[in-house]
Length: 325
Length: 253
Ligand SMILES: Nc1ncnc2c1ncn2[C@@H]1O[C@H](COP(=O)(O)OP(=O)(O)O)[C@@H](O)[C@H]1O
Ligand SMILES: [Mg+2]
Image (cartoon, rainbow over all chains, first blue to last red; front, side, top):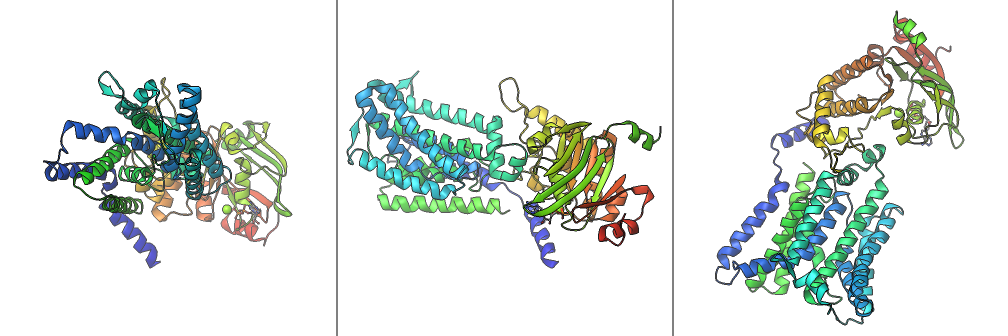
């Protein structure tokens, strides 16, 4: 009896003092980190147009992956395999392109991502295995595949249209990587916020039973989000291959943590039901800026990893506080 | 024309005939027949395990009956899925609130059936307008159609669930213990909303453990005991003692 009363009291207090911290934390964080580096790294070239635009270009693949992960996490699932899809897709594209030309190369790259997403999706949605375990397994599996595919060698990508289209080119004076980012964010945002598909993804992550009795096919939605995520990670692989004019098994290796951090800091709940594509973009830019600033500050790679880990910890803490409110 | 005369001339929205349902070897429902007329509230009462929820699930397409027939407005129908039941104008309000907590009231009202505009995008304006109209009509007191479900009280949530059912049900609403999780004041409010459904000319079948509630709301009472239909009484012509006797088996009829 008294425990019920306590529960009600705690809940009432929580409602009264309600602040939607998680939704805005990314914008404050972004601003704070920007101002911090702007002051501390004033003389190290942080604020130059060249450096700032570099940050945007470098974060393009992570931003694209983050968009996919927003869909996955909003549906209450996780996709760890994106960390190795990037390299597999880039390598598949590079190898295929050498023999068959550009279009089959692109198809091979995107196809690999979609296919791995399909495998993840079928195992999660229809075999009912937890996505954490399934994608952890495929993460390891395809990290191995990308290593054995080319004997750890790097495969050059020489097709100039490809390297321009996915990498260093520009259209109307705007770099193609910026185009990719803008288009992916805009499309992702519209699909996530303004379509029935997006609404159903959120409903599945929020309350799968409610979604199911409302006539939404829960397995189909789970399969769909994992395929979107796989496909976008494949696209990220093409962007890497285009910009670096080569594909290697190391591509995207360190992105997984960055992308998860970007998505969570960006206001997407780990347990599903709520998220933001624009937040993920800002989160991704924030992580990129952090990387860039820490390098300019002269931090070692290991120190950078420690700082990034701490940021993720803080983000998760805020996210869970919000959830249990 | 008196109410009973009206009942005699209109077709029942729901007619169940000789429904039988077994789970493996266990007989959950046997020999069950019941008709529900438009504008009528029928209460389904019985002890725990009597088969009330199973009956609701049969009518809502979750379970197929082992034998027997279901007719909607005189037409025999096969209720093979929840989607099919919805297509026949039947909506269910679950006791454990099938709402998506972190979404808005208006998204929940239209969950799975969201209207879109010419571009294929969500028609939020229409969802919000229709939600506001309905919650005003039913007097569900929520802060706004934009409110998030988890910021609402239990009574407000059940109000939203009933409003959703009302919006979509053209024939029949099934309520499985809609006030089981609510406090006294919230229960009164939800009872008020359920009572107001009578004016909408749809049938209502409600399961309740509270005989006070049953006598307050219903036109007829159907008693189940161990999967068997014990009897149906007009609420005005019976009393709690008789119903209790029927539920517990101290009187057979
Ligand atoms: N899915 C099921 N599988 C097996 N037995 C079931 C199932 N659902 C209900 N039953 C059995 O059917 C009987 C009626 O249950 P139920 O309809 O839930 O009763 P009530 O809602 O009246 O308390 C019980 O004996 C219960 O154990
Ligand atoms: Mg029950």
